[in-house]
Each structure stands twice: as structure tokens, then as C-alpha cells.
Image (cartoon, rainbow, N blue to C red; front, top):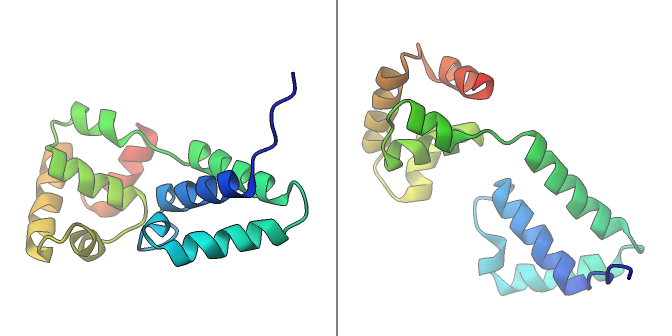
Length: 135
């Protein structure tokens, strides 16, 4: 039996989930009803298959570019707070951006960063990201 075609609402929800997962915005789109409505309008306007293709490409990109921060953190004995920072760094955020996102002080973020560098023996953030992608 063929798979049911996803509704515009299903595609809008999938799009918002992927946008949040890929951190394409600073805020969660699902938290703003006006964004939900606007994305549904845009998807309804697109030719058949385009929205499904876009969501599929986003999902494929996420799979291809994901790193396993959890196992890397476990291997190096990182705390949950340090793992959260590592995940933010892997997503392209800076320490100040991460601090703002989690509502912690930048100094606290810097302390977490230094502890990560100490535990992993990385020479800096760039070295840390390289290590993470090789893991």
C-alpha cells in the first residue's frame, strides 16, 4: 500500500523541527504561532513535492553533518554542561552565543570551555572541533 502523502501541516511541522535541529534560527519556530501559520502558507503555495523534497534534503544534511557529541563527551569525561557547550560549538555557536542561549554568564561558558580543553588536551576551539569531527 502506498504511503500517504504528508499534509501541508505535517510538512510545516517537519520543516520547523529540522530548522530547530539545524539551529537555522536563534529561536524555536514552533514557539511562535505566526511562524507556524506563515510556513504552512508557504508550503501550501509551493508546487507538489517541493516541500517534501526540501524537508528530505534538510534531514539528509543533518544526518551527513551530525557529530556524536554524546560519545565524545563520555570518552573525555565531560559533564552535561560541558557537553551542551560542545554541542553548541559543533553547531557553529560561539561561547558568548551559547551562554546567551542557555541564559548563563559568558564567564561560566568560558570556564566550561577551558575545562573541555583541559580534559580533551585540545590546543583551542578549532583543534577541539577537528577532534570532534574525527571521532
